[in-house]
Image 1 (cartoon, rainbow, N blue to C red):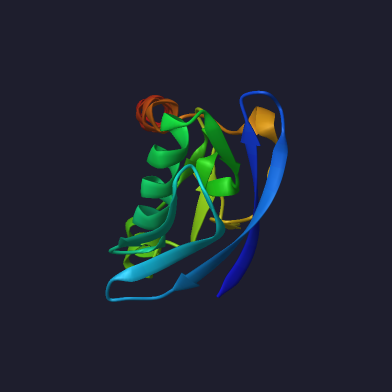
Image 2 (cartoon, rainbow, N blue to C red; image 1 turned 90 degrees about the vertical axis):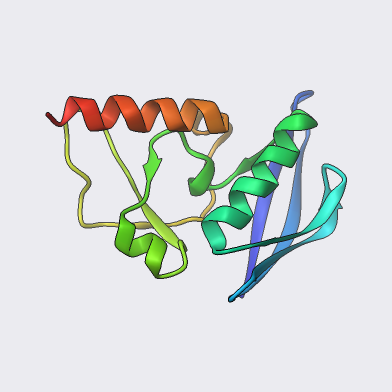
Length: 130
């Protein structure tokens, strides 16, 4: 599967890269040309591949502009069991809707956050549902 993903650098420069995802076992995400010093990410599913890519990007002040990097992106266990290719965009106090978004779908810079911000948002979202 091929996708185009935009990346933003801390100076505001935006570049596009081709992502080639090969389903597993041992899912592979190839970034062409490389970004943040790496081009190949091998993990258990698409979500883990993106998480590793984001870790590398964060270390170089680069942010991928995709739904999977949005602060309010969450995935159900079933979505993860199916390879992690989709998830939900959620709001505090509201359950996830039935409409899912593709993990590598395009989004804007003001919609994304760090891995830590995403984890914290999910915790607060889950607490808001109780």
